[in-house]
Length: 92
Length: 144
Image (cartoon, rainbow over all chains, first blue to last red; front, side, top):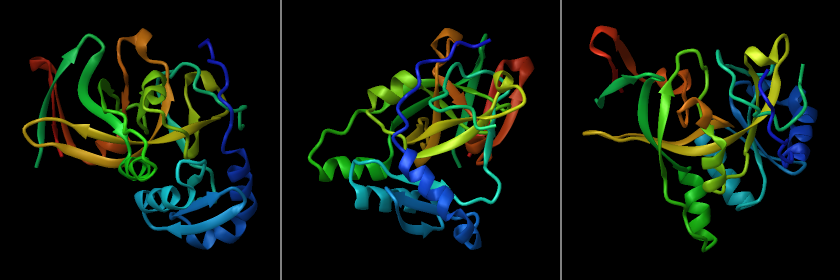
């Protein structure tokens, strides 16, 4: 079993909670990218890079979340362990 | 079109990639009057078993990047569930006679040094290219 590193602080906790709260109303924009700063939805963008650019313009170097809008949570698959990259608790 | 011949090392095909802060973050650093970290040269394992790209956590720290996203991942160790991890926006540059450039790309971080690599180049990047595995020649060919 892989040894997990110490958990990193979840600096996007507030933004993630905001995304989950807004998700039902965002589903009409599924596949696009939501930009959230704190508890505020700044906008929805067609491209990841556009959302990122708007995020840095709005929040500067402070935390913000760019999240692809999806009714079912996106999952990345890795056929090998990537050794302790879990900064948050198991999600399922 | 950019073409690359990648030698198959004992760890697998290792592609040399420059990893730096994303173009939008670079602009934010310049606007804030802060120094822009130099990109780091890394050997990434071409991994068709990875749906995303993963970078060594030490390099993420070296570049001073904070997470700008989250992603659920599934690995052999997550057994029946998934784990939520942070994603980081980086710039990826594949150097060669013609350079292939990804100015803003989300990656996860991991610990790869014990495996003799600096990270995994996953299908999120490989979907942009044609790949030929030249096993008898010990070379993988990529064309973007």
